[in-house]
Image 1 (tube, rainbow, N blue to C red):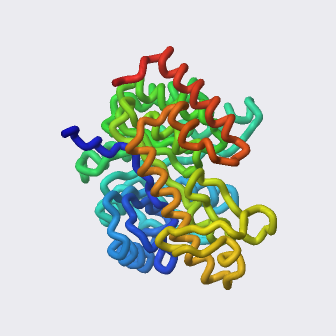
Image 2 (cartoon, helix red, strand yellow; image 1 turned 90 degrees about the vertical axis):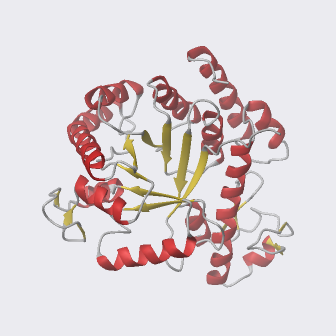
Amino acid sequence: MKNKKKKSLWYLCAGISNGRSPKAEVEGLLISAASDCKNPRSIQQTKEMMSHVSPKHRMTDSGGFQILTADKKGITMTFDPERPLSITKKCFNLAPLHVVEKAMEMKADSMVALDFPIRKIKDHDEREREFRQKLPQNVTWAIETARLRKDLCPDISLFIPVQAYDLRQFEEFYGRIYGIDFDGFSLPVRNMSMKDIAAFLLKIHKWGIKKVHILGSSSLPTISVCAYMSQGFFDWVSFDATTWRVSAQYGTFIHPYDLSSKKLHKVGSYDPHYCCYCKSCEGRTLGQLASMDRKERMAILMTHNYLAIRNLSREFGEAVVDSQYLEKRLKRSKRRDIKRILRCMSEIETMCSMSYGKAA
């Protein structure tokens, strides 16, 4: 009898709150220290939510998104560990100590270090200035969070966020934090292509780091890369997104076969006779879902969309995912980007083979 393959691909559900959660088993959960733990009330609500969904794995994000949002709005920010964590329209205070303390309070299995995200910029020179401006803070916070984690909660895995536009900048950042005690990197996808993500992951693999989290995407291209890289390159590859909930809010049905989006409010963008037999839809057609009251439809779609992503992640995590597998698995897909996905996966395989050789 063959030993069961150890689970190395994880989908972490992000954006859950009381009243807005999938009615299904949640294997992994991502919560935000700066959003879900910002005051006693939110902490109590988050604990109640976690008690309800009972996730197998809990990861706490640090609050980089909230920092970036406050920065855009011109809110004065402080990062004082001596003062309480405070995230309001008028007051913002967040420090590495707060992030570590909230991870401990939430009984997290892993946490993401505090970071100052770089903005989405296309111009090369502006990107360089943005990276340079935020590099010192990101280095300082990575080192400080690692020190606190080691002293206060060494049993919680630590992921360091990657705030770099390219591999050269990533290498510089890693050189500045080299030697600190951490477990993996957290990689924001932003506008990265499949090959971009794979290139960053290959660099991380080369450095001997065995864990990685992809922040903010549960798309088919991202999951395909994650599944491929979880086979021999890493002991742990996870990804998160709020897509399951946001899509439901806008009346969008995520197709379980290929994660394509069907906008139920847009006539002609879907087959109204298509039936879904998942636990949430229970044999309803897309036409029936489209004609429902918005609130009722949203409740059904939240669970359906979550299951679509979770089930495909489970399937890919148990399979040997490569370009040949994807071509066979997705042969009935009508997604417009299928050829590009298959081409990119083939190029990633070649890149991996030429660079380091894929581990058995």
